[in-house]
Image (cartoon, rainbow, N blue to C red):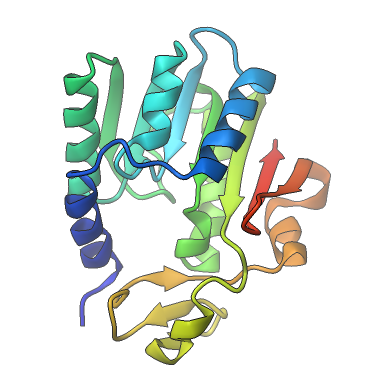
Length: 210
């Protein structure tokens, strides 16, 4: 059975052929985040940057963008996309729970549709790392998928000890998915650190936090 790295490596090799794909929900929340919390030349971390759809938008708005993803295919797709569009950005292959930057390096950070695709322990470490590398006044944008996503495929998954689903067969084999309830997201982030908690049209959860 393929593992999570192999699943996402294969996924982003395919995504590279469609580098302009973006989610309307994510595009809208990113636009608002950019307008409300960023300024020209903000230094921004896109954690779990994938094929770079969000990094491209931020770079097009003048942001100084850095992307981190744990798959080589994602980093390759980002670099090629930025080169093709003559955009400036830096991309590094690394785990989201061990960000290779010093403290207070970024003005803001985003992690879109990624924390619910790792174990709870990894998500906790990733949040710690984002806060470490973001300045004290910097904001963090997070999104989580609808908790009933993939309801029709539950028989293809096993439940890990922390409640995370591991898909062991079917098209998602190797993928992890944690079906966070709203209260669990607030607990993960920390109630006192939540600036806003909103819902996308398809039930995604959109959080701005410190």
